[in-house]
Length: 457
Image 1 (spheres, rainbow, N blue to C red):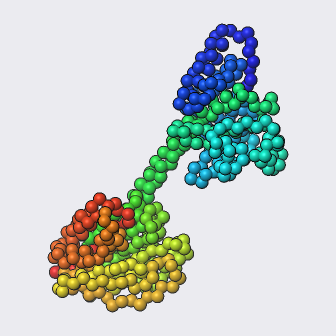
Image 2: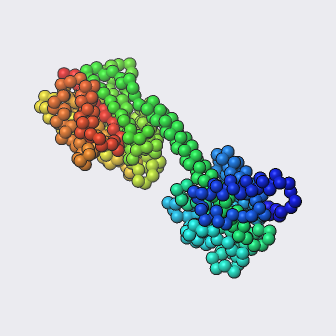
Image 3: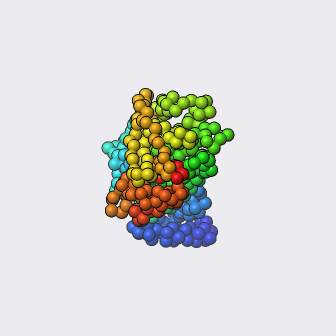
C-alpha cells in the first residue's frame, strides 16, 4: 500500500499527520532511534493501517489470529507477497513459525540464517538481492518452487526488551525494500511484539486454568475411590490417612470386607505406592486397585491375584515405573495377618505386651518390574491384644525437616511406645502431629498414606 501525495482535502492531511505523531509517541519506550527516522506523509496512510491493526490486535485472544492479522497488515503496508512470523523458543534457542503465508511450519536454531542474525543482533536486516547474500538459504525456494527476490527481517522486541521473535516479509512489488519500508515494518513490529506477548501470556494462563480444572476433576475421582466408611471388624479398630503431595497422588489404601454378611469376615488390606507423584502415578495406582477388586470378585486367591496383577502392570507401565504394595488378609478369628509385601516396607508390627516394635522387610520385588514374582510367604503376624499393625508409605519415613534429617523408623517406634494404649484414631492423630512438629517449615514432597490396625485390648 504505497499511496503517493495527491490534492486530497486538508482533513486527510491532518489525519495522516496525527497518525504520524500518535505512532511516534507509542515508540518512546520501545525504539527511540526510530523517532529520528519517521516517514513523510508519502507513507502516512500506512501508519493509519498500523494504528488500525493495533486496535484490532487488542481485541484478539487467539495467537494464530494475531499472527494472521500481523502478516495480513505486513503484506498490505509493505506491498509484500509473502511473510512469516518466527516466534522465539528461549529454552531451546530456536525460531519457529506457527503460520507462514504461502508456506508451511518451520523450526531452526536461532543462530542460523538471516532471521537468526536478526534475532541475535536485534537489528532490522534488509536484503534486496537474496541470491547474492551468503546468509540466504535457497533450499526452501528449491523445495517450493517459489523465488525470493528481496526480504526484510525485523526483530520483535516486547516489554522489558524481551525477544519475542522475528517478522520477515518477502518480495515487495517494487523489488526493493526502502528506508521508509524499514521504518513502517519496525512500527508494525513494535505493535506486533506486544500483542504476541500478551496473547502468549493469555494462552499460558488458559492452559494453566484448564490443567488446574482437569487436576481437580482427577483429584475428585481419585479421592472418591478411597474407602471413607471403613468396614467393621469384630475386636479390631482401623484408621486411615491419605495426603497427596500434588493435586493427585501415587499412593492408595483400601480395606475390603471379604464377606459383607459378617463382622467376623476377614479383611483385605492394601497400601500401595507408585513411583513418582502426580497424574501419571495416580492413574497407575487406581488401575491396581481396580484390578484387585475385580480379582476378588472372581474369587482369586492372594498369591495368584498378585501374580496376575504384576504381569498386567509389566505390560502397562513404562520401563522406569513400578508399584510397591502391601497386600494382606486380617483374620479376626485366628487373630493373624497373612501378607505379601511387594517392595513395600518396612512393615511395622508393634507388640503391646513386650512394648516392642518389629520391622518386617519386603517379601518380594515391586509390581511391574519382572514377569514373575518370587513369593515365599512369611509367617503370619500374630495379633495379640493391644497389638498394632502400622502400614506407612515411604513419604512418612523419608520426610525431611529443614535440617535435612529424615523422620526415620526410630521416631515412629518411640511414638508408638508412648501412645499405643490410645484408640487407633488418636494414635494416628499423634503420628501426624509428630510429623508436623518434626517437619516445621519443610514442604511435603512425597505422598503420605497410612493404614493402622489395632486389636482391642
